[in-house]
Amino acid sequence: MDKHRRGLRLRQSLVVPWIVVVMVGAAVSTAELAESDLEAFRDERGGLVALRDGLRSAKDLHSNWTGPPCHGGRSRWYGVSCDGDGRVVGVRLDGVQLTGALPAGALRGVARLATLSLRDNAIHGALPGLAGLDRLRVIDLSSNRFSGPIPRRYAVELPALTRLELQDNLLNGTVPSFAQGELTVFNVSYNFLQGEVPDTRALRRFPASAFGHNLKLCGEAVNAACGSGSPSADDGDRSASSRDDRVVRPADHDARGRAARKSRHFKLTAWSVVAIALIAAMVPFAAVLIFLHQTKKSQEVRLGGRATPTGAPDIKDKAEQGKLSGSGSGSSSGSRNAQAQLQCFRADKAAGFDLDDLFRSTAEMLGKGRLGITYRVTLEAGTAVVVVKRLRNMGHVPRKDFAHTMQLLGKLRHENVVEVVACYHSKEEKLAVYEHVPGRSLFELLHGTSPSWSQHASPFSISPMAIW
Image (cartoon, rainbow, N blue to C red; front, side, top):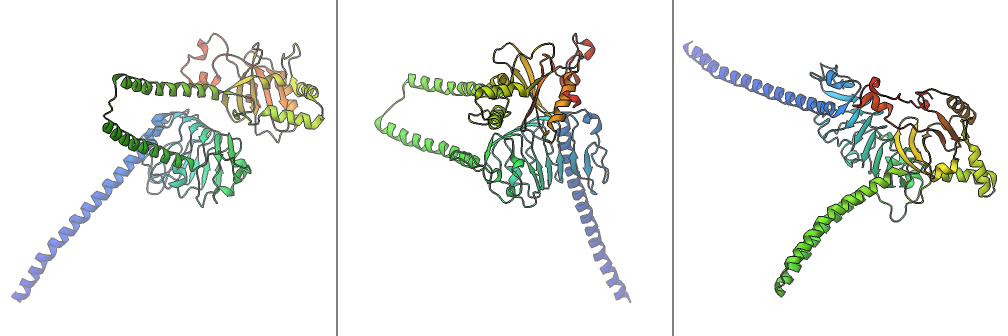
């Protein structure tokens, strides 16, 4: 009996320490897991706060986006959705008048983000990089003012992408080689993209309208043949490698040159060093001048929209083709048709210009919206300035209804309503011409830093197209 009791005590003395060790290990692992989750929540909230602090909005996100973004599976933050684990999976801020540029740290750490929609706002700058967000399925950044190229990361590091909408922005460069098998919605129209559209299976599924109204795209997807000098999606990688080669090859050449010069005991003189320094100082100065020249040149467009390069079609070309095919007569008949198609509404006095005068004049883009693009046109004679709105998405409007509506708008007379001067209707294009009122826009009066309305000496003016 004593032996049995001693054996039982021995086993108890061995089991109890093991139980303590296991419990302590479980507590430590639980603490480590809780610490990792807490760090993930902090990173997630930091990425959302960076987005909030970098933009201004009519929804006052600074007051709404406070505290933790998720409470269980729900969120009190406007436009934010969460999953059952309390992690953010969606950000939708459509049409809330977001202005500004996305900061570099925006959305960083929101690792489970699956939907990002910021459409119908006024965000400018480069597109977000979206690094580390490989669960993204829906990206809608359309109808903004984003500029620059489409990041290659969208095509390479987002395997679950099913929807990408970037239309109605100011993007340039080429279209990346998207190859996602589940990509079902894709639109990059109304931008400044150019070059060859990659012939991938994913992009072949979409119609030519998904690439329409760009600078100059070519390829099988848009039913346009590419020239020998057309850039492609792979040119960026090749140009980067060629730049690296240019960095390496001159270094090797200089090394060989230095060896040859040492063998000939050649020494640089003082004036050579000064000349090299002057040339090095002039290079960035020349680059700045070229950039300013190109920027100024890009702001001057014709009333065809975005086709500034030589040989690209515009509204004038389409109008002339329609006039020639309809009448079969010479230039004099075309001029008469142009004057007839430009319908004026000022009964007290003539408009003082015709359709050809508008096409010959230089136009400066003032802005863009859902109805179309607005230009400030200085007539070639320099005697008058008018504002022309190029209407779009109105191909379904019959000519009779369009003319009737424009006649009603042309009869409006009010001190705060801009007067409609004339309109133009064709199968391809619809234009509304109204008087130019200098000063600040209504958007700047509502959202800018200007004084209140009561402090303005002159009344503000609203375009009648706002009531279309």
